[in-house]
Image (cartoon, rainbow, N blue to C red; front, side):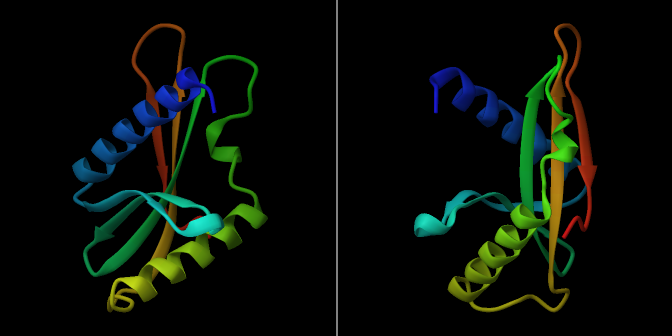
Length: 121
């Protein structure tokens, strides 16, 4: 991955973590890796629910909207990663596990648009 793309992703994750915190969630971990299975961008807690959050950041222009980036295959992968995270951290919380998506759209000018969709998988 290029340095610019990596920086863009990190910036989007920073904005996403801020949005989740402002919504009353606690960010537990960022960029949790599970071997070759993949990475969870943000693990958070929303009350008694564990939230696995995928963050997609796009620059304004001709690319697909960030909220369209989670395919059924990606959703299944996120659920598998969530299961591994729960297993390695002592079990599921009473509220279970939810997969959320935060889409960050960076226009050429002005503030970033940050959208949070709960329960996408």
